[in-house]
Length: 272
Image (cartoon, helix red, strand yellow):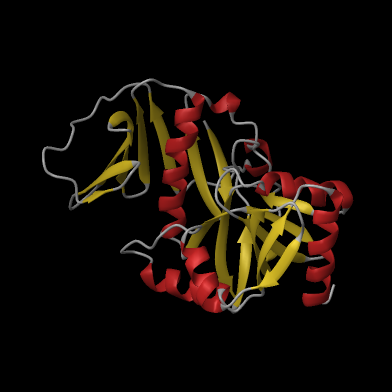
């Protein structure tokens, strides 16, 4: 077991595959925990006997007066379950593995973040000259590859390579890191204001354009965690602030010129 601090929240992790979680060391704390996430190598709980309150592609959700049960699935095959009871979250795995524990615990972290006035946005975030930038797109587009160009050709630091925590503080958007950072597990325990969003798509030539708020909204919705009953007001406020940022659509290859083109544009826009 270990206590970690993420977004100023202390969480005790009682994981089966804790030693495989290579990103944890940067977040370990001796502070008392506010939450606990515990894994179990079985499905030892009573399955719900009612119809789901919500059905998605990846899970079915059952809500009760004092707890929530989330049944994780893949093509209708049950992989595991998550039970949320106040500040205790239990992960049940049908066939235990680090990959499944990592997947289930990502939902647990999202649940906790939602309760603390923040949201999660998919993308690779960097801190460059004290400005925060998120590069985002559909999975497989090359966000991490593009992020590595910045690490290679500049002094940019990765904040998080997959699941970015975004909050509003002093009327500014702030990026927070976490150790849930995608298949490459690239993250640093640093924070930054969020100053720009770049939506990537693959292109043989590098084409960068600012996009309208209407277009930006359509794209942002596909990359952020949708609101829950508990955080609708916070979600709306953060989305409104995101739409105030410079937002680009960038078609690029994965060569040095791809870094150079967008870097020059952002330096001009952000007055770096």
